Length: 220
Image 1 (tube, rainbow, N blue to C red):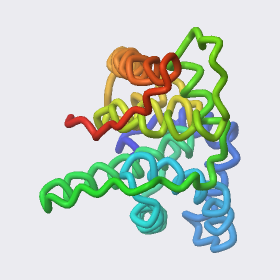
Image 2 (cartoon, helix red, strand yellow):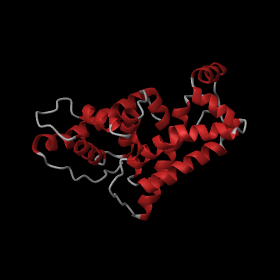
Image 3 (cartoon, rainbow, N blue to C red):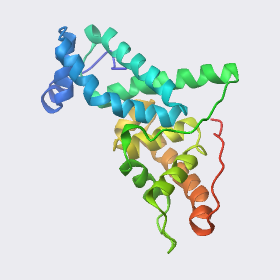
Image 4 (cartoon, helix red, strand yellow):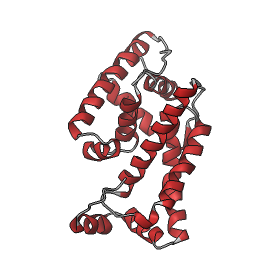
């Protein structure tokens, strides 16, 4: 969430530079149209990101609604101390972490097939490229490669997976990811480095030999 103490210069900078911050300020003033516009802009992105984080499209849709409910409830306290997307994904990260902890306590870990969702192929392709710097001569169908990368994401622990999703799906800089995850930029860099190593380790045997990874989610 936004810090209780935000400098006036930061407020002015984000207000002037981020159209979504401007919309959220209208939401703060009870504009239903502005809130609907933010939902339109971010609903698909949140559902996609949360689907990969929690392993269930249905749960991700429920969590997305919870995120927007939290945004609306917090509207009167909103202060633009960061880009709107950073603030929103911070809320989403908390919601996803709470859901995963709750599911873990109930011992109901279900990893069904993942729907492709609204993200499209490009973010998955970005992860694939980042995870294997030298692709061998064996060519993979794009759909097949996407399935493999999704499976490989399950080899990551919760924090590594979120860092990768924010970096490769949303294109967030280290500083923004650090704010979302309440870490230092150096810690984010370390998380992403370890995650890339894990993804490369999982993907390379498949790319070279055609062995489909059958991964289960790691602990944290």
